[in-house]
Image (tube, rainbow, N blue to C red; front, side):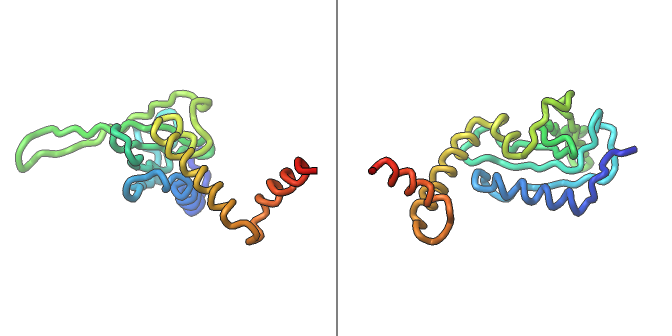
Length: 158
């Protein structure tokens, strides 16, 4: 019974850090649901959390990513079904793990999103470009990375 051996606090921290890594591409605040016990749909993997987020400019709508430690991240399908109409309508969720093998999981939420959502890759490249630009702009503020660029330029000018 080594399912979910990661402490809930460690799971939360990992999820929060992962969300921070992809937040630049999110429209709105990502929603997180944590699970502390194995549910019937969690087969064959125990899912500690499902993060639901929408990527800016993505017409697919919300994407659900399951966190399944220590294995990684994977897409999860959530279908909402209504069993009746009117006042006593009950909606039930049917959650499906799309991944059947550990080697189909991604080691980060970032790479899971990149694989799932083409728009994410584009936003990611733009984000990286602006980060590089910001780094170049902060020239001389002791960030470290720019010195290498200058040294390489100096060597060329000899």
